[in-house]
Image (cartoon, rainbow, N blue to C red; front, side, top):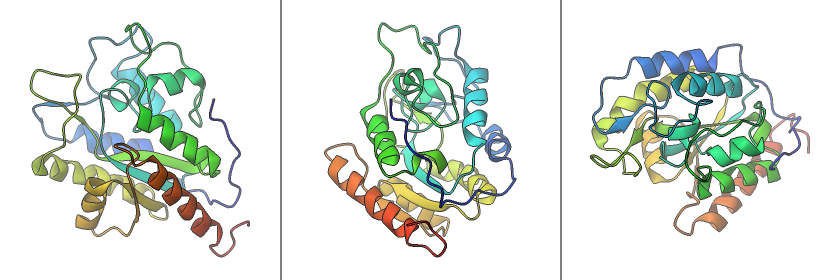
Length: 233
């Protein structure tokens, strides 16, 4: 379990309902072929305890916390968000009870082993180590899961059109959390935030050998946040 200590120096976000803002923007997305919407569609291997409604409920519960830092990835993946409904979050982490604001869940899929995503475990472990987990929210520049044609259990890079379609959702997130620090995980996320004119921190994605750089980046970010006026050192 990745449970950790709350960071008392982080300030709460406003009373804006983060989930309601995200849900409204997600519902307004146009149909996008080759993309799976975890909060509106069902997986072939969803268990009886999982589905679009459960993913919406899970996201809403997780979002109902004071949020000071938002990590933005590239897109939802088939081993993580597609089944969990939460960015950088796998079925295995939810079963472990490792996600802030959520109780441990039963199995979410019917496959022999729970879905597990290496990057997800690295991200949450690092956030807990730096005492950032309790007030961090994770999202993606393109919120849906883009996959290869006819291969729902695959990942692909979102197209320019898809990233553009996801911009209203990023705007909704920023409007709901105007004071949160944004951090891009990977180049695609950084490009998306730059196009919208949002100031942000840049982190290496932990995939493809990027774990040490990602960890070092989060450590440096945590240090800068703690040095802000009024922060507890």
